[in-house]
Length: 324
Picture 1 (cartoon, rainbow, N blue to C red):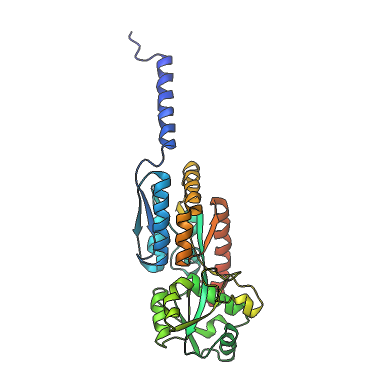
Picture 2: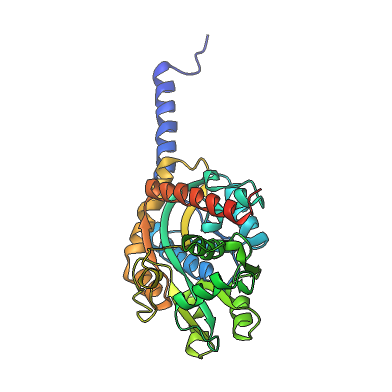
């Protein structure tokens, strides 16, 4: 009888397969990577994503293609990230809204459907008024809001979005009913700021970079930024804490993540590459010049950050009566 394979040959065959599999893992990535952005091209998240993608491309030696998947206040893009195959070739740049959707009822997805890789950005919210409003300080505006409930309007985002929660949380901290200021929903800060400059609303929450052009044109005044310290790119803008005596840090963030179940070795490779990009002169200079805040957390710290954000947002959303 002819024997097709000896034990020695079989062992060598299995060893060859094992070595081949190990080499495949070690060679990640072997093809281009797609980076999903849940917001439109030209916005802040898109800008950060493209700068990060450029750096990752150099570090990983593969093309990193930014794909904008917009709609549903970020739900469509975030859902696309969570539903991707966990092989490291489809990643995303989730934003703070991923910790709000399930509490508001717009989607069942949450940060728990992601594999965190790195937090690279935190942008503090800022509080702006029309240049002719007569308010010259945050304290003056808050006093009027408290004395005249249901008389003022605010805009800058959809209900329950990150900056809306930042504004509502400040009011709640100051003993003001967050619902006493009516929200006029907008598809982002730009249309809200245009409405503010035109006198259609009383207040707008946004990041400082988003409002800079109108501030320079003397069409709006920014009364406060919600950060621990004044931002180096905007040293003349006072913090909320400087004016109220109570710390208040809130805003939005952007990070790198994959779908749930991303293998640990791929996470480690991507986190190492992302940290090198984050620490590079190119990335830091870009973020500083554009006025974006920089903040780094690796996979474990990023997970903890999202866990805490989710819990805090759930509480504010409940206070606003937006919980589903």
